[in-house]
Image 1 (tube, one colour):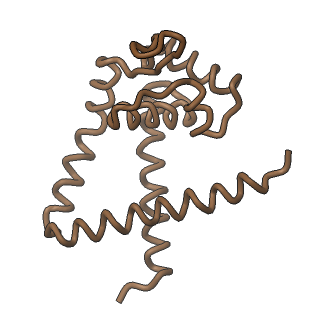
Image 2 (image 1 turned 90 degrees about the horizontal axis):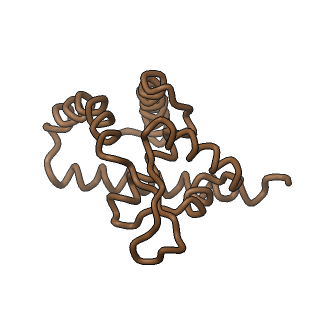
Length: 155
C-alpha cells in the first residue's frame, strides 16, 4: 500500500522535474518563469473557449496591474502573445497566443507528450480516471492552501 507520505514525495518529485523541464523551455525561449506561467494560463483559457483579459490574468497570477503589463509587454515583444479587442465587447482586451508560438511550444512538448503516452499505456481507463481524480483533487487542495496563505499575507 502507498501511504500519504509516499504520494506527497512522488508528487513533489513530479513538480520538481516538471519545473526543470519548463525551465529548459524558458532558457531556450529567453523567457522568465512568470512569463511561462502567464502563457500557460492564457493557453488554458483559450482551450476552454474563454479568452483572458489582462485584468483576469493579473488576478489568476496574483500580480499587480503594472507587473502584469510588464509580463505582457515581454510576451508580446517576443511574439508569444497578442493583445486584441474583443469581438464581443470592443471595450475589452483579450490575450491570444499566435499560431507560430503554439507551434514552438508543440515542438518542445511533443517528445514529453510521447513519453507520457508510452508511460501511461499500461493504465486501463478506470485507472486513468482514478489518476485524473487524484490529480484534480491534489490541484484543488494546493489552490485552497495557497489561497489561505494569500489571505494572510501581510500588506
